[in-house]
Length: 147
Ligand SMILES: CC(C)(COP(=O)(O)OP(=O)(O)OC[C@H]1O[C@@H](n2cnc3c(N)ncnc32)[C@H](O)[C@@H]1OP(=O)(O)O)[C@@H](O)C(=O)NCCC(=O)NCCS
Image (tube, rainbow, N blue to C red):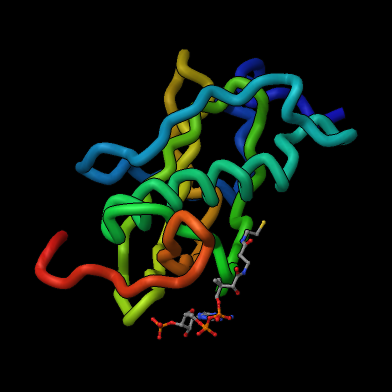
């Protein structure tokens, strides 16, 4: 079983981990990973990360559209590094395109590992598209002149 990142010794870091720094802005979402979110190998389940990415992207899409949105497409999703139990995961979502009824959002995900010797690693990049809908689920135009 993979050793949880929380317990891993700093000198046992994989060579592939590229340390970085967290972006200088507030994350859309920040979550501490839990044992309940692991796959059979002991890493965090990819579906859990996809779910959190969808939540973060949906938050900014809903804010920009001033209302309800539904996800229409996952345009890209790259798991660059595994996430371990105990990692604190930050999701940075940003609107990159606004269409007539759709909004495209980029999400960057960073893990903060082993707090005794902190290391920040970019773990995931994703692009998702949402469509603004009314209360009946019919697509609606996105307001202009707002941010
Ligand atoms: C989203 C939904 C309302 C779109 O209805 P539709 O009549 O098929 O919409 P359209 O084909 O006219 O596309 C609407 C917008 O989405 C965009 N879009 C549609 N499919 C897309 C795709 N695969 N990738 C990117 N954008 C897409 C279109 O370009 C259009 O954008 P624009 O108005 O900014 O130019 C409808 O498909 C739906 O309800 N889907 C289910 C959504 C859902 O339940 N999501 C949760 C899944 S668990």
